[in-house]
Length: 305
Image 1 (cartoon, rainbow, N blue to C red):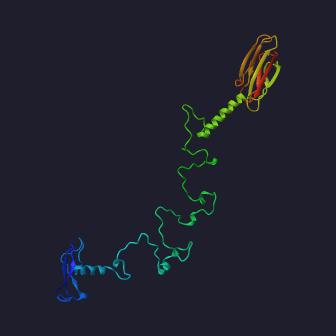
Image 2 (image 1 turned 180 degrees about the horizontal axis):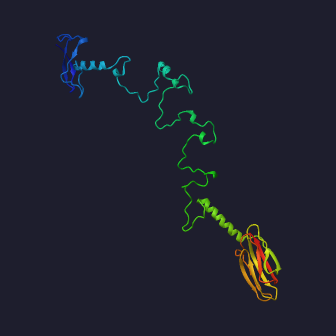
Image 3 (image 1 turned 60 degrees about the horizontal axis):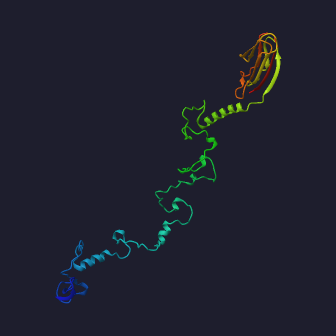
């Protein structure tokens, strides 16, 4: 039996027996020798493959695991590409068979299969895109969502606001909208009507002044009935010019004022301030009705509105 020295794990020098490949003593067959360790053992969890023994068993198993040449995935060693690895060339056969032959839009059969990102939305076809730029009809527009913090002006054609639309504030307590009024536009039209009537009070038309006498018993038309509107009296003076007592009735469609001129010179004189004019019934004449055929004088200021 031939021996050879070796350094053990504890640093001491020991002798190792070298046996020939056939197990006999003598000069070993270098190409076929076996090594036997008396104090060495594999790491925890590592076992010598079936049929292997000692160092040669482990080395032969490692050798078997290292593939030589291209082979299948199941027979290959798993590796990781370095983080700073440059681009790996693609073989000509792969490029020819898998990559598009030209750039630009092409048919499905000549396109490279890709996967759209999970958060990417892509129109299904170019027929969903507008054919022209600029404003167009709803049917020819691309559907979009207005930003939640964007303010969009409402066109005049969209007024009045639809039912339930937000309004600026609320109606005052105890104040009711005018008859037929709806929303802001209803209130504005009511305010306009009110202001218009007030405006007519403070800016009345030009006043017409007339004077004269009547002496026929019964009805005497002093101002003819207007075709529209009413007669508004601003000044009125009526006086009995006869020596006989006379009752004078101021009338439109009914008696509005009764005056007794008991003596000559008796009568009334009235001035109606702006906003408090004496208004007769619409489209009626001003009549002085005398109780007898006695002369009565008058002076009147009026306008028609």
